[in-house]
Length: 361
Ligand SMILES: [Mg+2]
Figure 1 (cartoon, rainbow, N blue to C red):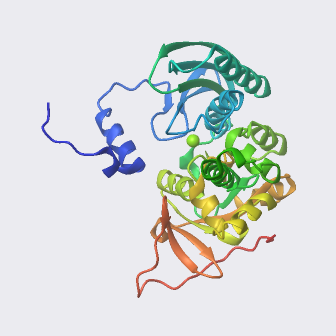
Figure 2: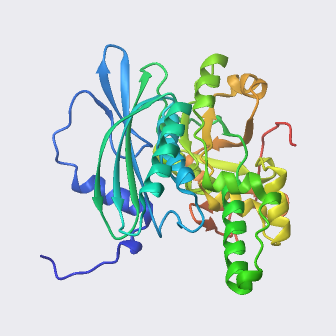
């Protein structure tokens, strides 16, 4: 064993993926494997023209959720949704799920009932089946889910398909899940401060709290794309924030991108929360994450079809890789956009430029 101890945090998510790929590079690779590590799901040939997509995601107490915030039924629902979201990101539909649960001793039978009720509710919504799993005791509540989905080979969409000139789009609205988290954290602090005098005020924030605690995967948009004859050129789900996801698409596609900040779609309730806390709302969308919307690129020819579809916004465009990933707003101009934050331009770098003509609202 090596004497060295390098903290994992020094790698970052992108570095960690690179390193895993490197360690696994010598494994024999099946001819039926179409996409391995590096996308939202792995893709392999299932027979005929059909492909299967395979994805797994875990929710861990203390890391991904706080049991004092989230009702068990919502947790069950969310655990299925976050996995289905990765299936949707491949433009696929989910078929089967297995679930592995680590249960701490302070969990009751009623809590487990709630958890499974939530999973059942989600499976019904996404028209899929839960077909097996495993359970054991553990120190914290741990829910790991794997899902197999399917997609016709002509419909599959990867992160790697974006081309220079494509438009960057997002479904629904963004930043809401982070706004919900802010409200929940604030309410908890109030509870600690006020003790028995505490009366939660959650009614005004129903939408954003639901975005945080009970997100839905956008399988409905996958169906809408198909109905409208739209095939995105690349796609990813928004689990870590727009900034991170755009960087994933840019990296896998070998392109650059500019996100037009004023075009980011927000719900009025998300705006109200950002105003209340005097926060920059853009940061909620760019770095907050957990919105489980779909970020995708389209050929410019399809922009009218996307406009006609309810609930999609054009938020930027794809550029040459030399331009990198950038954010553009009237206040700040053009700035490099890294997965976890802005980086201001160094003096002497190229002046801001931006050319896209899509309706702003
Ligand atoms: Mg994903």
